[in-house]
Amino acid sequence: MVNRALAAAAAFTALTPMAAFAQSNLPQPVESQALQSLDAWSVSAVSRQDGALPSDLWTRSDPEFLALAFDRLPAVYESPATLALARRVLFSGGDAPRGDAALAARKRFEALGKMGAADELSVMAAGSRAAATDPGVAMFAAQAELARGRRTEACARGRNANAGDNPPPFFLRLRAYCAAVTGDRAAADLALELARAQNAADNWYTGAVAAAGGAPGARPPAAQYDNSLSAALSLAAQLRPGANALANSSTLALVTIARTENAPQPQRAQATALAFRRGALSAEEARTILAATPAEVTTGLPPIVVALRRIQTVTPPPAAAGSEAGVVSVLETSAAIADVLRASTAPADFAAAARFFHAEIAASTTAPDAASAVLFARAALINGDAQNGQRLIASARQAGADEAALAPLDAALVALAGPRGDSGTMAMHRRIDAAGTGARARGTARDVAILAALGAPVDGGVQTFVIANAPQGGARAESGAMLALASAVERGAVGEGALLAVVAAGEGGPARLDAESVERIIRALRGLRLEDDARRIAVEAILAGAPS
Image (cartoon, rainbow, N blue to C red; front, side, top):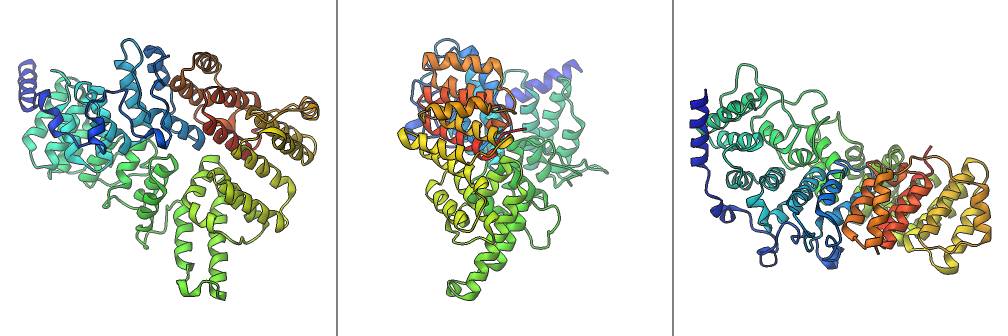
């Protein structure tokens, strides 16, 4: 066995190109001239004009601590606001922190992979030398290429990775997959044999590789969608999905399925909706994929697909605009969107539905009822659309919506614009005037505290109200992360502070936190001059309401 393992290792090494040839086989970055000389820290997926953080975002931080902070980021975000902040900091390039920053750089790419940012990860890996020299970075870059449907590039990543004489199991399985789908059974068997020699044999991969190579066993395994490699292999082998096939899927795996046209239905529709909810697909791409769902597929569909079909059914031709038929169509379209918004009780589900139907909501001129008008206004605000939010709040008020339901929307609108001066104080007083008593008053105090954290001046009346109606409910933010966040603010460590704000909020984001935690996070972000992110978190917390 030892001799056979050594022979397999030697053959595998012989078949692997030298690292010097790695760059020639990599996909070209989108901005190739700007990225050619960048390293794992300076490479970026967003420009300064589009919100990238300053180039010194890492220079005041310890690389060992940054590695821990990257590792503590959620894999799945229930908060669109903290997801936006995490994406902003992870996509921003800058000067490397002082000291040995290799592990932290690898953790940065790993965090990109966990959140499913396939396109951005691919661009950044293509522009960074680390993708050729660091096997950890190469692994996530390969997974990103698989999620993008670029098998050739993914296989090149695996071949060119500087993985040493004992490559990790992932690279061996990737090599087996690449060989099987191109008809090279000998190379596929060789890679699997080396995995067995390293005690990394896996019966599922053995069976799936055989099926992908055209020699399925008597009972091929069920599809697995745990990661983008197992998903790509399952799709290439045409393995049938079992029950709850997507239960343990990574976001990159979901993107892989969503972007594969011959993926089984309704799993493709479910994967697309989940990947979109997690921020890994744009609304335009998700709508294109979901609109292509075969009409005969009617079970297991996500709610946004059901609503989309209703809209496509009732949309009139342009000539009908303004006619009686056009008015009926607008009402039916609004009803379909209102239904999916009403059913989206979790903040992340509501935000996803609002983002998916953003164009229809922005163009909405009517709603089926006052409650639906409130939903549309809330959706516009969660999308960051202050102009249409203001218009839709006025429309809901005109339709007779309950002032108690509109009061948080008014507060969120002020938070979105940034409360300053007398207008900020007046906004808090208007919120207090609609407070009511008991739990409603305590919920109002939470909103007032959030507005104060954004910079609204607090007068004696506001102070009296907050003391008399102390906010209650919600979880405390992680204390260690909050202490570290305060230190990052003092040092002006922007990137570190942004990461810690996300870690402190946790997977559930600001909607689950108590008032004091939300207030401290907002003030910390403002101290780091991340005003837009502070406002997004404030709006999300206000619209979610006081947690129980």
